[in-house]
Image 1 (cartoon, rainbow, N blue to C red):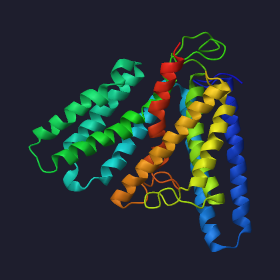
Image 2: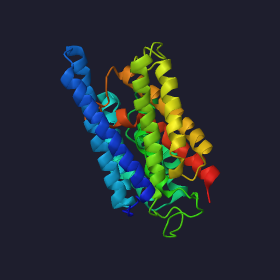
Image 3: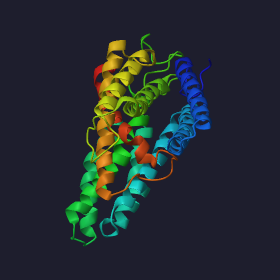
Image 4: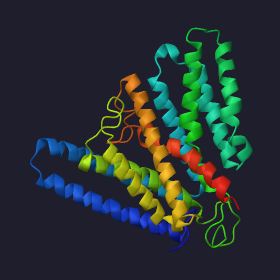
Length: 332
């Protein structure tokens, strides 16, 4: 297989595997839908079919961006971050939503953060939002002259920016990790580590497949053998059986995909386990936020899944920790 953009032979092997899984899932869901006569089951299968179609689109968009190169990936996640921030802003009561702050976040601060990322300026994109922007936003709110619910309004804008922009940006940042691959080279053509070599997309695919796979596997295990709910008032569909089965299965998947990474099989398993646990925590936290606002989904952009935040909640918590653990322990 030839190298296209950030996708080399190893990455294409994984993409081919994903396509096979999607084809089999599509055929299985269609066959079950045609054979069932139960209205309740048919309704469930309609949702499953919507989810599978959405997965086709999401895989296609990510692979397409990786094939176009790092700039396309950065622009893709900037767009996703802005949509996620818009979904988050829609949760704020009108009296707590500061229009000027949102304009600054959407038009200036978020693009500037991603520009630092695109420039590979690690020292700046790592601290720009947690330090400078966190100090800037309360000042901007104070200058507005409104003092009612000041702490609440400041916390909402800061939390939204942290979750929707900062944490999410660590997914494209994975492309820049200064890691040494199994053969001691960053890329087959000898290009330097972290410069966007042919296999730079492999580690990002590893993280996305493992964490999103954990979500799917937890859902399947929960539907199959789930009995005991973890947090019924937060996420009624999450069960201990689904949690254990899904996490262990996704950890095994991560170990099996070690060849995509600079890790040994056991290291890949450990990082997959930590990423899946953080992904579960992210889903639980974001579900709590939805229950607080009495909504089912953050949006309707992705049929069967909800909004961008509904689909990315697990990656939001997993990506920053995965990035820094890999950078700290596997830097070349």
